[in-house]
Image (cartoon, rainbow, N blue to C red; front, side, top):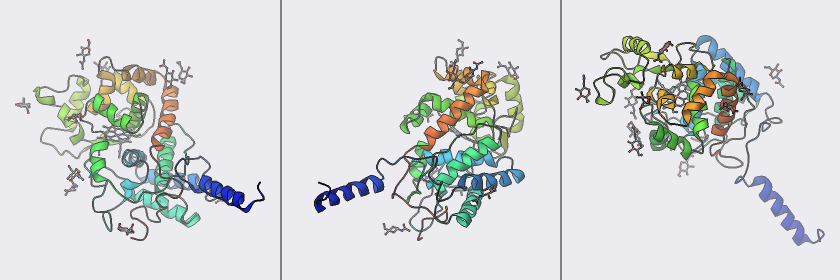
Length: 331
Ligand code: HEM
Ligand SMILES: *[C@@H]1O[C@H](CO)[C@@H](O)[C@H](O)[C@H]1NC(C)=O
Ligand SMILES: *[C@@H]1O[C@H](CO)[C@@H](O)[C@H](O)[C@H]1NC(C)=O
Ligand SMILES: *[C@@H]1O[C@H](CO)[C@@H](O)[C@H](O)[C@H]1NC(C)=O
Ligand SMILES: *[C@@H]1O[C@H](CO)[C@@H](O)[C@H](O)[C@H]1NC(C)=O
Ligand SMILES: *[C@@H]1O[C@H](CO)[C@@H](O)[C@H](O)[C@H]1NC(C)=O
Ligand SMILES: *[C@@H]1O[C@H](CO)[C@@H](O)[C@H](O)[C@H]1NC(C)=O
Ligand SMILES: *[C@@H]1O[C@H](CO)[C@@H](O)[C@H](O)[C@H]1NC(C)=O
Ligand SMILES: *[C@@H]1O[C@H](CO)[C@@H](O)[C@H](O)[C@H]1NC(C)=O
Ligand SMILES: *[C@@H]1O[C@H](CO)[C@@H](O)[C@H](O)[C@H]1NC(C)=O
Ligand SMILES: *[C@@H]1O[C@H](CO)[C@@H](O)[C@H](O)[C@H]1NC(C)=O
């Protein structure tokens, strides 16, 4: 039957459909093994360089991947500047404006990759690789980053405003936002552990320090010695942009101290402390587990990063491989 020209045509069509159809394409750890075998070490080298002059940059880079993936999936939409067809950027959305950083390092990574393998590695994959490099270079776990994402053609500022969790939200709302992108409460607790490094501005938690929810008193779940420190660092009439370590016990190290902090009522953001201080929540035992067992945290964190990196990627012939992460090709 294979000799009939009609069957051959059918077979060829089937072959093309299976190889080109992006609908059920999967990300793969070996996606660039023939087209850019050194992609991961190129990314790692640039991140390592950047860390030498900015110990915070690893934290800033992993946060970009998170804020990318929660809006239109992991498609590098957060990297697009206003211009051409992009009228409202995600960069200027409420959770990112004057907060998200590291865009210049992403551009340096892109330049380095374009020098070795022009037109091959997507900006969305750069964010996933930079996140892993940032964590492992800071003492955290390593994992095989799944690759093959392509870059989106749109930005969604309204989506960024509403889909990215706010530090002022209750645990139920945050859980719902994770659930909306297919992540469960284990992912929520594990990924919140990224607050083991990096900084937060006073304006994201000062509501807890003096008059919490109109009670006239500070947030009762805040450790009183830590409260006093934070009241000094963020006085009522002070600058809301002042920076504070998310994990004062080891500010630039990726470890499980974030969870020990929560157990001691030393979570910096309301959204952090809620994981431990919400009575009856399933998150409490997970926090206890991770605070007692760094291996358990690292194992869960690596798996949850893979889960987050799998949020609605563009694959196959969808989207494009941007040559400049800040703008669409041809704009
Ligand atoms: C669970 C809900 C989350 C909320 C409400 C939240 C909120 C925040 C806020 C308000 C800041 C401070 C930003 C600033 O001061 O400019 C911050 C920083 C940070 N977030 Fe989250 N976050 C969440 C989850 C995550 C996740 C899932 C990750 C990564 C896996 C992450 C990684 C980081 C890092 C590393 C920083 C420090 C960034 C830097 O120093 O530049 N966060 N987050
Ligand atoms: C890959 O990167 C490593 C380390 O940076 C370097 O030693 C090696 O020569 C590179 N290989 C290729 C094929 O570029
Ligand atoms: C972003 O921040 C700048 C100040 O740096 C402000 O002028 C602008 O209005 C903000 N954008 C949005 C969308 O809030
Ligand atoms: C996103 O939030 C910012 C700040 O609140 C606001 O200025 C902007 O109009 C919002 N964008 C959209 C598309 O809703
Ligand atoms: C939580 O979600 C509900 C329903 O979407 C919303 O009305 C409420 O304002 C949210 N709470 C906070 C603190 O954002
Ligand atoms: C706390 O905030 C509430 C509501 O905003 C206000 O009515 C009250 O006067 C404030 N209390 C103090 C002690 O500032
Ligand atoms: C407050 O923090 C200190 C230092 O970590 C700790 O010893 C103490 O138990 C904490 N208090 C509470 C109520 O968690
Ligand atoms: C949780 O329960 C403890 C002990 O029963 C209580 O002291 C605390 O106020 C409760 N916390 C919250 C946030 O309701
Ligand atoms: C810590 O977690 C790891 C990984 O889940 C597990 O294999 C190990 O038994 C745990 N250690 C203890 C002391 O519970
Ligand atoms: C602790 O977390 C690890 C990793 O997620 C998990 O395998 C283990 O079952 C957990 N242990 C407990 C006691 O919850
Ligand atoms: C901008 O949008 C127009 C109209 O949808 C489209 O034809 C054009 O290709 C877009 N430009 C870029 C650079 O994507």
